[in-house]
Length: 324
Image (cartoon, rainbow, N blue to C red; front, side, top):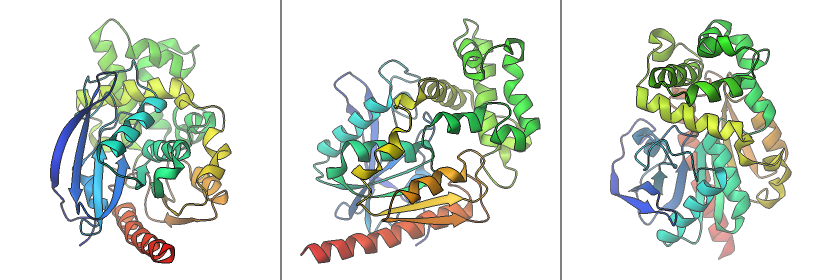
């Protein structure tokens, strides 16, 4: 078994939240295995069948959900009642719904952010963490990805020009302020143009080697709208965090085991984020993938994540034996 083997869910459902959101929820793998909840990226990216393949289905009870406003969750493109705190509450509702006392929390990119935020809110319900492409939600992380003169724009100046094309006439404004106007413009064509530019920028720079987006510059409109609208909403609000919140609260979870996988050439989430996180986490193991960028679909990243899940299973087994 490896990260390329397809895994089918044994059940799917929509969980209604107290504020009437319908959260898509699926389970696959071994119902008696180690429960693991996977947090997808974005925010607004939605889950993928590929995410099931990052865990050995014989060892793990794999739980995947679509965060508010995206994927198969409804209402689609919902920004009201959509914050990090809402997502944490949704995850806790899922845990209670499934009758689990503890679970492993996993996620990539923004999913790593959400996994950390959930863990710091509910450390007593966490067995440990498997995280990929660390994003800490700091202003410097948002600068790196979206603002001129920082990291990604300096490495991909041609792609960055395409990214700012829909807002070039709004140049006196900050990039997030300008995109706020375009993504919420009364003209649907303007909204779509902005959403596509926002989403294609991120997709183009997600892999070490050129991908389909860097070649074609095309993307599905609905996926682009979900990603752009929800990402922008979160980043405009600093991910609904206090400054430095995740690193400042590491003491709440640093006693738990963690496997961190980060592409050496990740242009979306800078390597410093992973290094800074692990420096505060004695129980964390950091694996650099030397031939990859950001995307979990890159072979090196996918294989490293699958290996991390096997190693985590051994760690948790050892902890269980010690407890007995």
